[in-house]
Length: 286
Ligand code: SF4
Picture (cartoon, rainbow, N blue to C red):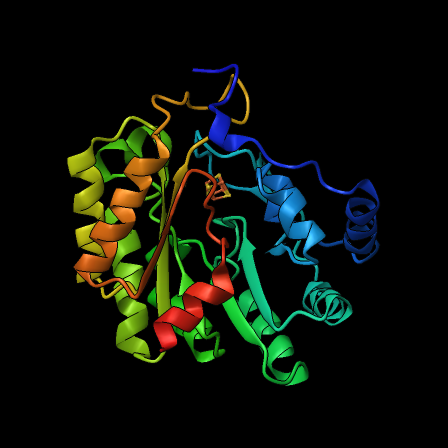
C-alpha cells in the first residue's frame, strides 16, 4: 500500500535554516542520527527543537530487516573518536536528555557494546545531571554485552521488539522475539533501577490479539515504557504497509497498556522510539 498518506500524517514544514545548521553540526562532527538514516517523519520537529537521536557505530547495518531504511552491508571500522564527537554535539545543543542508538554490528566480537560503554561514560562524566537513554541491538543474546552496557550507567535501556512474534522471520530475519524479551528481562535482573523500554510498529500485518500478546509479554519481562507507532514504507523495495491504523485504535492501545501496568505508553501514528523520551522517563521515575 503506497501513495497518499492518511491526513493524520500531515506535518508543518521545518525551517530550512534550522535544518541546515543541524546538518552542519552533525556533518562537521562526522555523526549520524537515526532521524536521518531511518527517514523518520518527525525529523523536522525534532531538529527544530534542537534535538536528535544519535546513531553510533556508523550508518551501515549488518542485518536486513525488511521494514528498515537504514543502509545495509559491510560497515566501516569503529570510529574511536565517535564518543568524544557525540559529547561535543550534546554540549553544543545543550541537551539534558540524550538518546543514543546504533546499527546492529554482528561483525564485531562484542556487538558494539564497548562503544556504547565509552559513549555513556563520556556523557555521564562530562555533562552534569544528564539522562542517557540507550536503544540497543540484541547483541545476539550476549549476556556479557548487556552486562557491560548496564554497568556503564545509562538511566534507560530501550530495546525494540518492533513487531509481533509471527512476523519475525519475514520482517526481522536475524533477530529472535524471545531473545529480545530476554534482553529486557536481563537488564532488570542486573539493575532494577534502570528503566526499560520497548517499541512496536503497527501496520505490518499483525492482528489486534497479537499486539496485546506482545504487550503482555513485555510486561512479563518487567518492561516499564512502551512506544507504538505506524509503520511507513520507506521505498517500494521494503515491506508493504498492510494497514493504516486509525488514531483512535492507537489511543485504545495506550489505555490498555496503562491498565497492564506500563508506567507510560506513547501510542499514536507518528510515535517513534524517542518520541517524548524525557517525558516518558519522568513518568516511570515518579
Ligand atoms: S537491525 Fe535495526 S538498523 Fe539494522 S536493519 Fe534491523 S532495524 Fe534496521
